[in-house]
Amino acid sequence: MTAETNPVADPRRYFETIAVERSVEAASVPVCAYLEVTNRCNLLCETCPRTFETLEPPADMSWELFTRIVDQLPGLMRAVLHGVGEPMLVRDLPRMVRYLKDRGVHVLFNTNGTLLRERRFPELVESGLDELRVSLDAADAPTYALVRGKNFFDRIVRDVKRLTDYQRARDVSTPRVSLWLTGLKETVAQLPDFVRLAAGMGVTEVHLQRLVFDEQGFGLARAESSLFERTQRSEADAIEEATALARSLGVMLDASGATEPGLSLQRTQNNEPWSLCQQLHARRRDPADASRDLERRRLSRFPRTAAQ
Image (cartoon, rainbow, N blue to C red; front, side, top):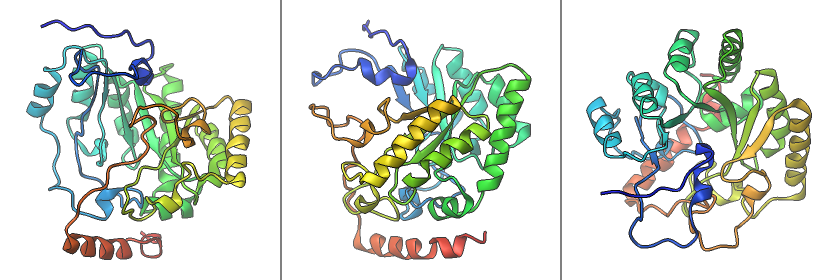
């Protein structure tokens, strides 16, 4: 079977080649795949469902399963190796990246940065990884602990700076390192400081990421915290200030799904239901599970974890 695929000039923005009108059956083979290499994580983020409910038993994707999936995707151009877990917990991660790079695939993953030790810098660079996206979500340690559940802020800032120094000393440009801030009403005022922090760490790319939440909400992932279609003047001012500051510091300030941060917070006027990832479908949960989740939420709040 043969299938035609549209050329993608920039694999990072593959979605821009997707037509608005689509048939019921796929007309071509997939060009992008999200492979959740693990569901394990070492943080308790207030914006992540795994903090508040048991989704499935903890596990890593086996090498056999990984290769079986990849080998079924001959037209693959872009692979994202993350889901709800922390990819750098996976022993085979560098091998997985190399397997994809040997097939000419653009490879990236998000990391919380807690495992970004110097001894791992060579394997990150030599694997051929194209992008390393560091989800930091705050410009200072107290806010970081509030959002991410544990306080690794200073260590992550230090280690990311060491990684960019390592790359410059060896004149290598990949993986392309970027910092990510989830757009919350609780944190958006920090966006200018976040841009300054990135520049000081040697990172030249910052992304404002849309908060994804369901109808029930959990932790900070709820409608009240979302900036989508709810942006106030002060919040818009922070985004504008950060945009101007980024330009002056040589930092690219982008947004997931949109080139302009402000645009990513506005509703689109087309018929693409997943355009700019508006929100997740509501999950159905057993009442007993919901009760347990509420207790976990109470126990994992900032006052308890800040000292960890």
